[in-house]
Amino acid sequence: MRLTSFTDYGLRMLMRMASAPERGFSTSELATEFGISRHHLSKIMQRLSAGGIVMTKRGGGGGGMLARDAGDISLGQVVRLLEEGQPLVECFAPGGGECVIDGRCKLKARLRSAEAAFLKDLDRASLADIALAPPATLEGAIP
Image (cartoon, rainbow, N blue to C red; front, side, top):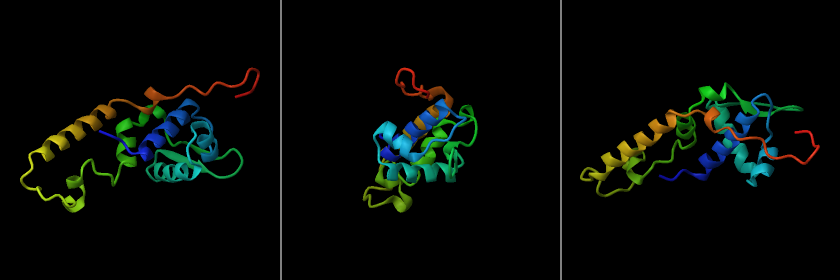
């Protein structure tokens, strides 16, 4: 299986947020840390906020922070939210996409089973299990 970059970047953001759950992270700060587009991260932050994974606050001391304890957020929940609308294969799309062998294909059931097993395994781990250590800071600098 391959996750979209949207999900990959979202997981990176959440791993960092889980390392310091008491503070807010701006998308600009996270974009700089990970070398990713701030605009792209803003869209991911919006999706995570709408899904109840993060909460956002404007102004000084604002930014995104986890909406609940990292131990209560399963990786499967995050992947389902961020991969929403991204079918594993064309025939999983609403209406079956353009697949001409739908109805005769024996692969579809196997792929559904594999996808379910993948997500079930991710459900067994939480965001707390994969929290990043804060990045190294310059000697003497305050993190």
